[in-house]
View 1 (cartoon, rainbow, N blue to C red):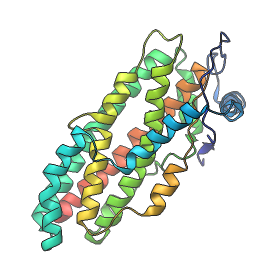
View 2: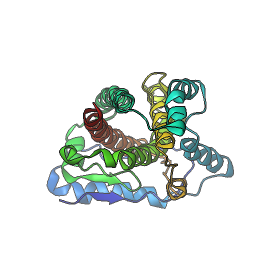
View 3: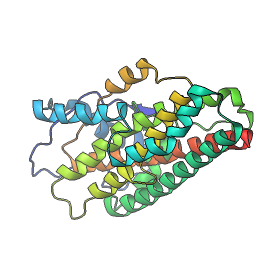
View 4: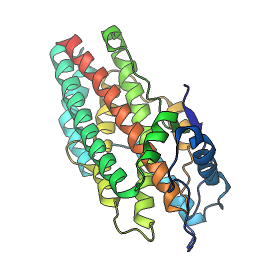
Amino acid sequence: MAPTRISLETVTRRKKTTTTASCFLSPLRLSAVVAAVVPCLVLLLTTTPASVGAAAATARSRGRFASPCSGSSGSLVVETLAAVAVEAREEEISDERMSLTFERLAHKADRLRRRVKALKTLYVSERFKDRSVVRDLDQVGLKLDGMPSTHAVDVASIAQTQAVSVVHQAFDDLARVSVFVDQARLGELLAENEHVTFEADFATIEDHHEEGLYLILCSLHTLSLSLGRSVDPGTYRDILALRVTEVDRNALRHTRDYLVLRDFEKVLERIEMQLAALKRLYA
């Protein structure tokens, strides 16, 4: 079954409300999930426009991927990969250096995947009292519009000539994910009537000093440049055009952010497999 994509086209401001959303809280069966779940998510398209301040904050978070090497963790990555970039400008990078670089990146992607998976498990246990909701979401295959594909790839067919395209696509996919992860973090920060917050957990996923999302983005960006290919301006334009709705119902936010974590894990798994395959090719 083809994934059902949910379009999130507007940025909204959280409104104070005492209304309790009933979407996704009652038992659901697969036969009714499309009728019950999709209308709830469609409410995301009918919320009010963002204030100037909220829109500006969202614009800043959307644009952060464009300079992934800024900040302390990014600076460390620049230092560790500087030799690779210099070597690329002066002479062809050795296979040994390429193999080591891909091995390190694959390891970081796998470590981040494990961290995302752990957060997803904890998030489900705290946010979904009825676990059948999560099962039904997975079976139907709901996806958020703008998130990258989670389709598996045949790593056995990867060749050295595809190294540049693999690195570029990995950067594109994770840059897209970064927009949704940052919105999830902001949602946790601004949430009301929650007894547990995951804001710090999302922030750690973004900025962990050894395996954070932006550290990996910085590594991919630097490696892409060292291989002689800068990030396509079209990538920046497309990602900057993404709009992630900040919902005003906790139940809707929980569903949206679960889908983000679920697909983020799958994207990282695919990227780790591709990088590991390239490592073996250059070994």
